[in-house]
Amino acid sequence: MLKLMGAALILLSSSAVGFQAARSYAERPRQIRQMLGAFAMLETEITYGARRLDEICNHLAQREKDPVRSLFARCAEYLSTLDGVSTYDCWKRAVEEIWPTTLMKAPEKEVLIDFGKTLGVSDRADQMQHIQRAKTNLGTEESRALEEQTRYEKMCRSLGVLAGVLIVILIY
Image 1 (spheres, rainbow, N blue to C red):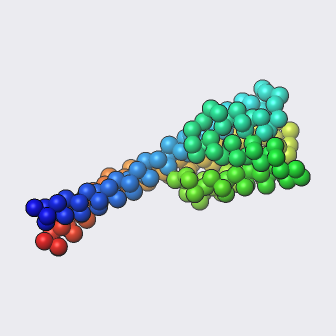
Image 2: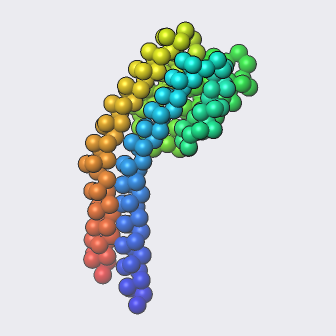
Image 3: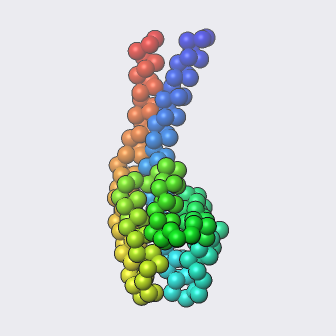
């Protein structure tokens, strides 16, 4: 009876690890799409609104889900509380702070930090160009993430289960 319970625990735990790895492949494209949606709203706010950037970031934080919510909330907080710090520094701090909580990878981080270099330093038309470029780059990364999801998600789930079966066979 104990052997059977041990085998079941091994199988369940290895399967859980495989399913967790598969979830990260499914979650990354969703987070990129969420960021794309936030950039679309940012574009609208800058084009038609007359709010300050910290107010826009607060508004986006209220409308989005984590981790995008955290990014814009942190940026708004830094913009309103840190005197003498550039918009880029506030944006970069926010990206660096929330990055460990995301499942996005280095290319997306590079796009976000690069976008921050131009945030709030030019006129509306120029801001629109930079937002469009960031959206295009994120769209490219979303396509790559979807390819990875298609390629690796099912494999991770299967490997988790099969590794558990192999360990059970080897032990017993």
